[in-house]
Picture 1: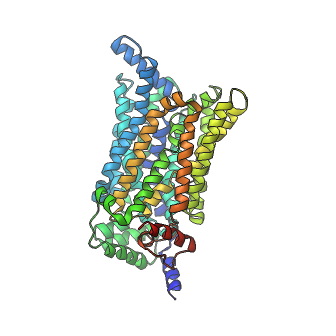
Picture 2 (picture 1 turned 30 degrees about the horizontal axis):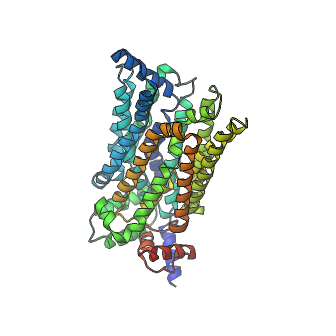
Picture 3 (picture 1 turned 135 degrees about the vertical axis):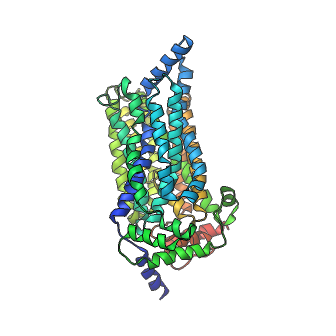
Length: 503
C-alpha cells in the first residue's frame, strides 16, 4: 500500500513542459550560459591578431618588441584571467541568490556584461591591452555568478521529471556559445585583424535580450516559499510555470522540506564542510567539478587552433575544422539533453568521462606517430571531436544538476560556491599552464587528462547514486540513511549501502 501511495504521489509531483518553463530556460541560458561558452572560445581564432596588438603596443610604449616567452605569458593571462573573474563570482553567488533570489541574481548581474563588452570593444582604439584583460576579468565575474545561479534557478522551477532536461539546457547554450564564436571567427566574418575588438564585445547582444524579458518571469517558487515564507507568491509562480494544474502536492512537498529545515539557517561554506552528514555529497561535487575542468576540455576550447596546427592540419583548413567540432558539440549536447530523463545522470557522466579519457590517450598516440604515419593527423582531429562530444553528452551539465539535487535548500548556495570555486580554479590552472606544459611534455600532456577522466568515471560508478525522478528531500534521505529504504531501486540501495559504510 505504501508503494502505491508513493507512486501516486510521484505522479502528482511530475509535470509537463509549458511555454513559460521553456521560455525561462531559454532566456536565462541564452543571456548567461551561452556567454560562458562564447568567452571560452572567442580568444581562439583571433589569438595571433591579439598577440600582434600586444606586441605593437609594447613596442610603441617601450621601443622594443616582446620576446616569445613574455608574449605567451601575457596572452595566457588574457585567456586564464576569465577564470579568475569566475572564481570571484562563484564566491559571492551564495549571498546574491539568498538576498536577491535566483532570477533576481541573473538579472542584476547582466550590467557586468555591458561593462565588459564596452571595455573590450574600446581597447584597440585606446591602445590598451590592459582593457582586454580587465574586460575578460569582468566577463568571468558574470559567468561565475550565472554558472551557478542559472542551474539553481532552472532546477527549482522545473517539475522533478523535467529537472534533468531543463538542467542540461544551460550546457546546450554553452555549446551554442562555443559554436557561435567559432563561426564568427572565420576569416570571412570577424576573423580579420580589424574586427577582433568587435568580436570580443558581441557578448552584450544576448544579455540585452535577457535583461529586457527575464524580469517579467516569476522568481523560483522554492525560494519564495522556503526562504521568503511567501506561499501566495510561490503558488502564483508554480501556476505560471506549471500551467493550470493542482499545485497542492508541490506546495506540500516544499513545506515538508521547509519543516525539515525549520531550525536550520542558510549555511556557510565552512558549516557545509564541517557537517559530517554531508561529507560524501561534498566530496562528490568537488570530484565532479575538478574532473569537469581537468578533463582536457578547456585546453581544447582555449587552444583548438594550436592543437590542430601541431597535428599537421593545414593552416587554411584549421578554422573550418574548428567549426566542425562546434557542430559536434551541439549534436552531443542535444543527445544528452533528450536522453537524461530516460538514462539518468550516472550513465551520461560515466560514458562522457570514459569517452574523453580514451580520446585523450588517442591524441597522445596520434601525435607521437604522426611523423611516421601520415594519416595520424586525422586520428588527432577525431580524438578532439571525441573529447568535445564526450564532454557535451554529460560532464558539461550534469555536475550542475547534481549540485542542486544533492543538497537541501539551506545548503544549496554554499554547495554551488564550493563546486564553483574548484571549477574555476581548475579552469584557471589549465588556461595558464597548458601552453607551457604542452611545450615541455609534448604529446604526453594529454595523458594527465586521460588519467583524471578515468578516475572520475570510476568514482561516479562506485559511489554516486542515481537521482533521476526523485525529490530533493528523497535524495537527501538517500545520503543520510544508514539503511536503504524500500521505495528506491535495488541499484540505488547498493549505492546507499556504500555511503552507509563510510558513516
